[in-house]
Amino acid sequence: MEKLEQLYKGKAKKMYATDDPDVLWVEYMNQATAGNGAKKAQIEGKGALNNRITSLVFELLKARGVDSHFIKRLSDTEQLVRKMTMFPLEIIMRNVAAGSFAARYGIKEGTPLANPILEFCLKSDPLNDPFINDDGILALKLADREALDEISRQARAVNDALLDIFAAIDVELVDFKIEEGRTSGGRILLADEITPDTCRLWDKKDHSGTVEHLDKDLFRRDLGSIIPAYEEIHTRLLSLAKHE
Ligand code: C5P
Image (cartoon, rainbow, N blue to C red; front, side, top):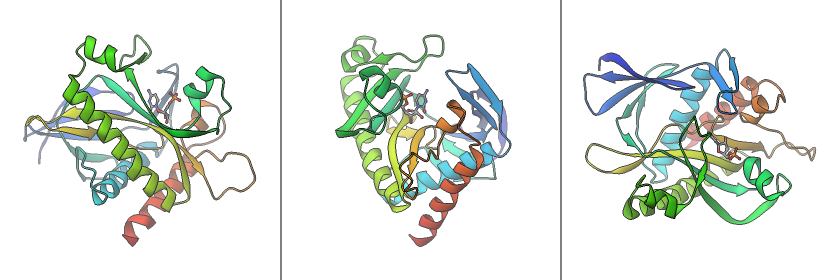
């Protein structure tokens, strides 16, 4: 497989074309951003950890019947994925109140939710990814009814499988964001990444009563270095993958 021209540079990844029109070459960068790029830093080792973590998560999901765009990890910071036409949506699943949900409804972070909550945001940097509901998505033709139903079904299936994966490594899956796209053959599939940048992960091994964040909230909220936390997630996932 040959790496060709750069197609896209995002906040955390670069995407390159390959000699196969259905395959992209992804490079994970060390850049960390928060608040839609308002806060930025270069964090040595972050790209490699996220590349390794998302590769393991996609493999563990596959073992639980959830397919994704992931093909294989190539190196510390690189992987191959299937090329997709992305829906311009951030698809958020929540199991515990936190972040923007807790703030919006005036609920204490950590409040359990009676059922998982599926939310959508329009993916738009200039608009700060505003909330959008099903009718809005259909009215703006961001996805049709059939696609939206499939995206929702997959988001809930990803949540069920991730809850199983993270419970097995003593981590509480508070919430997460995924993205979905369509392959050239028209199949809707999970894409992008699943890492501590895109999930809230709380350590269940910590019994002090305070939340031990193993995710990007450490960076967003200036709570400490993300590297030891991301290393902890990586070590636990690796051990789970070896035992499966
Ligand atoms: O900020 P908020 O509470 O809405 O975030 C919900 C979840 O989605 C968090 O796990 C966060 O890491 C993730 N997220 C993301 N990218 C965004 C917004 C949220 O990965 N642009």
